[in-house]
Length: 262
Length: 273
Image (cartoon, rainbow over all chains, first blue to last red; front, side, top):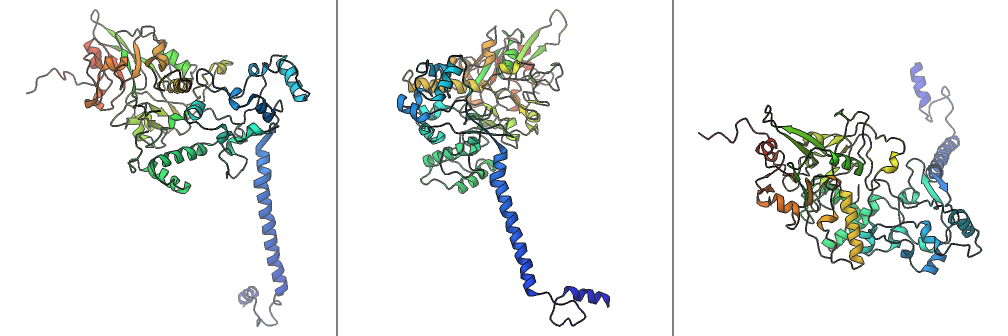
């Protein structure tokens, strides 16, 4: 009979009689449920804080640029981006200007900004290049042609680099401790959502723009992102399914990978 | 800008001129950051995008004759771009570009299954068994236009594709500045490192689709017959496999031309009964 008794212990019911344990207090039961829910939410919020705030801060180191550069001020004086970020005669893009480009104006200290004084005394007079940290430095395997995008494609700097020309201070350079890449490649938003075209610089972001351009050239309505993903899977898994815009390459049936990878 | 005609970059190697000096190997290795090992004679691990083979006619002195045969990647077109290695790649890490006719190798996509190496009849593909190790200070001499490969991926000759890209950038810049009429490249604007290094001028590189390029004039590819050379001195390696390679060889010697493919003993000499 003991087994039945034990069984009855687990079965809280009104008519278990005086033999069994007293029926659990409904108030106590509600309390237990409340505790479970409470600790669940405490745990959830704690994990969210760890995942969204603490982990990204641990993942990225924070570095200051050697000189706090005022883009807005320089932009007012020289007029456009290309004065300092110019194309060389061999078609390559100069990127961050070297000391030689700055020396024209900054042979001596002109203003009262301590950052400028630091630049002139520590770098110009010492004839030492400034070790700028490059926010948009791509991995080694990437070939990016500024000439093709800016000179042929007529794109704005802002489309990829954002309104950096209007900034008055250099933002903090954040480097991924694992990969060594700048945070601007992955984007500020750790979950990978982006609102503007300049929020991220991953391969998907190149593809977004290129696929939109391709779609607008061949179809009336641009495809939704999900539709494009499905299209891509079909194109790669079953080459030759789509007869349109064939010819770029054999495996992917479009622009070859070798255009941007090296 | 008008749509450019598809290119088909290819090579003509004159075996009568090749002295087997190996300058093309050295130029290739330094241009493309090809890693080297303490013992380069260990062919299980050594990597040579361009490799010179020695052929001989197998006859005793005084009829003995030697020929050196440099072998880059043949950039097979196969049947409409279905070259042997491209067809088998499960990762889309190698691809045939219809615009240039160059077989690409994307190191970051490759996961090292080596199907392509098994499929390549020319042994033009190499596997990185180890991470590259450069002697101290030598990493500063690496070519920044070519990425260094890691352990576990396959690599091969790319016809110095990065030179095409940089030449293209220059052309785009000059076109934008109004210094030229189009962004189409001239023959001498895109040349591979081995071509420029060859002291005998045995390697010629250019667009096989362009009748004004020397490769087209010398090899005279017959488009109706899968690019078979019309020049009687020209041949391609293992042509009968149907790989449709874009590297043509020239030789005035009959035995060298026959060595370019596998023939049965006496094949082509016997009369049919």
